[in-house]
Image (cartoon, rainbow, N blue to C red; front, side, top):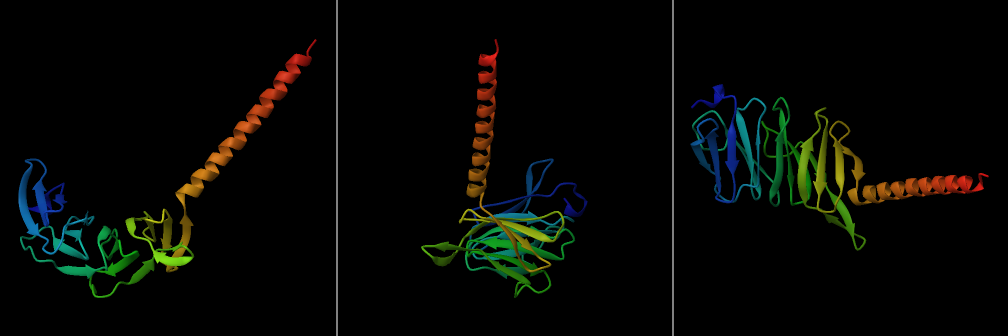
Length: 203
């Protein structure tokens, strides 16, 4: 089947070091690509359905989803497992996250060096450490990346300003929300207590 005319491109991969393409309607595997040197941790398909990105350890490889060749058309490298990958809407660049503690932005035409490199630091016993990146998502505005890492932080990376614009800690947010709810409950209790006292004072 020709992927260029298919409404759905279904692609899977895993610890068997293989990327498989499937025809969704018939559930038949139409093509298999061997990833080679590692398992595959993550996959992404470009919006135009022409390319598939597969992340392993420590490489990310781009494959042609339409043609029959199994050779990668581009390769990008991290220092550890690639845990997240995605394409910019117009396929001008891709982004990756890794257990090496970095988020990177790559130009598909120049895979040797990243266009952007963001380090996810946190402090442990007052010493700076790199936090393994678990996930990265591209904001619909195409100008911000949101990453989550092992330190428990969610970071927003402003691509135009080339910096982290915000750091969020879910645990601290939950604590603030719990404190806010407790304060609201105290206010309700005070109101109920006042109402009860007023009822008792009625002749």
